[in-house]
Amino acid sequence: MITKLLTPTTKKTSTLQTIFRFLLGLFLLFAGISHLSFARVEFLAQVPRWIPLEPDLVVILSGIVEISLGAALLVLPKYRVLFGWVTASFFIAIFPGNIAQYLNGIDAFGLNSDLTRGIRLLFQPVLVLWALWSSGAWRAWRDSRVKNKKE
Image (cartoon, rainbow, N blue to C red; front, side, top):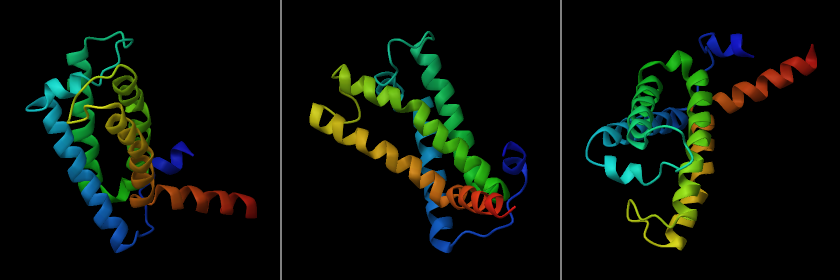
């Protein structure tokens, strides 16, 4: 499976998937830049207290990861399946920060009630699915399962 992910993708995605992959890439670039600049304090609110690193370092590192993933989704289309999986994994990895913000009742990004913080939690799975669908990662995984069953 890992070897297949590192192999350039030859299958095309639809125009709609490509548009959504670009939108996701731009979203990640914007989020990453905001981690490192104007929204840094807001992102500090999402760092769970149990993480054994300095919260500011976590915000900086996650910003760098977001910029890298956003750029990869935009400029490395042959590796979109790999970066689709990595991006989906990243969204899963940062989900505890959203949960911590909800559980601790921390206001940030205009999320100033349990209701708004709870609604935000519902959108994290959407981001995971967006990354997998728009990159063609989900289809590549499904196609590989079908191919393995035939062999």
